[in-house]
Length: 92
Image 1 (cartoon, rainbow, N blue to C red):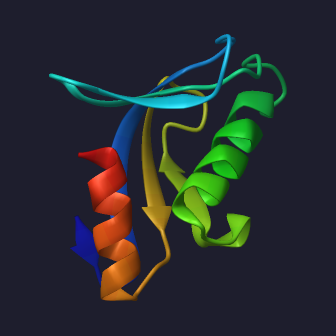
Image 2 (image 1 turned 90 degrees about the vertical axis):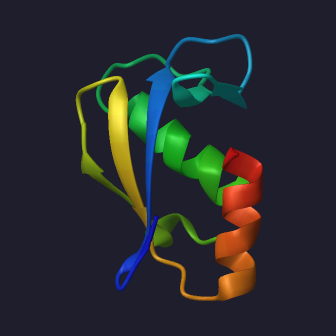
């Protein structure tokens, strides 16, 4: 969902996975992360993985809700329509 401040996405995170990957499910988007949910490692890994996948700087990705939960709401600070469309195509 595009907003003034950027793109808001909701996803579920599955830490301690065998590899980093994005999976589309009936319920939405699930992101598997190799890091364990200890000391914010999974969140850091999530941001790094999405940064590479979406080709945006890590500083452009902010966890706005669900810092300690498996269900997260992220703000991706992008304003270029091509970039927004690319991110949406990866997620949907």
